Amino acid sequence: MNLFADIRSLVTDALGRMTRDGHLPAGLDFAPVTVEPPRDAAHGDMATNAAMVLAKPAGLPPRTIADALAARLAADPRIAGADVAGPGFLNLRLHPWVWQGLIRAVLAEGTDYGRSDLGRGQKVNVEFVSANPTGPMHVGHVRGAVFGDALARLLSYTGHDVTREYYINDGGAQVDVLARSAYERYREANGLEPEIREGLYPGDYLVPVGEALKETFGTALLDRPESDWLVTVRDFASRRMMDMIRDDLALLGVTMDVYSSEKALYGTGQIEKVIDRLRALGLVYEGRLEPPKGKEPEDWEPRVQTLFRSTAFGDDVDRPVKKSDGSWTYFAPDIAYHYDKVERGFDALIDIFGADHGGYVKRMKATVAALSNGRVPLDIKLIQLVKLWKNGEPFKMSKRAGTFVTLRDVVEQAGADVTRFVMLTRKNDATLDFDFDKVLEQSKDNPVFYVQYANARVNSVLRKAREAGIDCDDAALAAADLRLLSHAAELDLARKIGEWPRLVEIAARGNEPHRVAFYLYELASDLHGLWNRGNDDATLRFIQDNKATSQAKIALVRAAGVVISAGLAILGVTPVEEMR
Image (cartoon, rainbow, N blue to C red):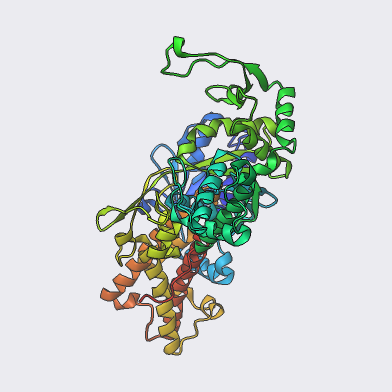
């Protein structure tokens, strides 16, 4: 049940009748018409912009449309009032029985309440993390991993066919550096002094890799030229690093459906094929770029390069796909990889990049637009930095990693559920402060605790009710006399529960899972507020002397718990049933 969608249908049906009756001109587009919570709850339960967005195309004053629409809506039994405000906004009030009936519907649907077929038939690829296989995951990867997984869960909840994908960047120079670094740890495992020179990876995480190399190859790779062992050690170390990365992701409850390798694109003709395709479209050519900004002309050496005409799709400059030595740039295999995703039949692609990849956004969107003839949209979400704090100071670096705080460091100190929730308490493009002290404190200022405490309170009410002999099965609660929910605070909580399906669709359309975390905090606040009012007003307590009254009030709190559980599942957070 989506009450906002139901009332919007009521509005558009009324507009349709106004068109047929000649009160509105034919051919108006009702798509911009919305029904949403009013900015000020005192104005009503819902508000529609119908008169405002239709006034200009209809050639009529907004209030003329609003007055006529209000009269038609008022005839519906669900509408208690339809009031025109300002230049033509229309505020609607629903009868209490509508909100009471919503609680019954929530209990009947369970955690399916809020699900939709928004994405039915749509195949979506969500590529996230995609870290170089050169070491353990760091805190920046944590946020991207949580965001990507929560987004995949959100899209699945709204009916999309989602594939989670990890693109292994194992085709560049960084994996050769990994091989050389691992080789030094292999020498160390064989009793030699490692030479961790500048440019190599110094972290202790490669010590086990060196030991595994010794166990596998003994001394066979010692005192051999690099050309003899580089490929062998590189492949061995890359596999070990990917095993570590999979284990790290598992700590967060993140699993991938597909792992794609950059290295697998080389030597197969796939890169050449896609570049030739773009050349045939007139989008790859040989040319010279303008001097970079900030360089004097005499310092600039123009040379002919193979360029992708990304400016044809809104990019700032055309982008090189081949270096002057004839080798591919990093951009070329990325083009081939995205073409592969298009060819696999996805209807939409989502890439989740670190903030330092902002320069890639326009060129990748241009590439996908060119390769799919504009059919497949690509949405790129940039994940901003995470700043770690502890004891009022920046969190120290990890000795094991050598240069950064690892995912394992964060999860071991805060826990997976806390980590996941906190990583979604800011929009992805805003910097996030992760304070180990604050995320573990028990206060309203800690959104994780506040939401979990609300869920624990729901379960506490259910336990106490059962101890009192009250039937709390969902079917029994749904059959309760919900007309007994008449207090304004109770109806306010029902209204917030009613926003859930609308919120889910808005979050899914914008690829914004953080909206779920924000909503859960607001819902928890309303639930705690009602609970606290019961301390002063005994009639608002959930368990009463009268069984029928108790069941009605418990039905309300149980419905809130259903939504909290559904929301936490989208975030990948396990609901807490009892606070300790």
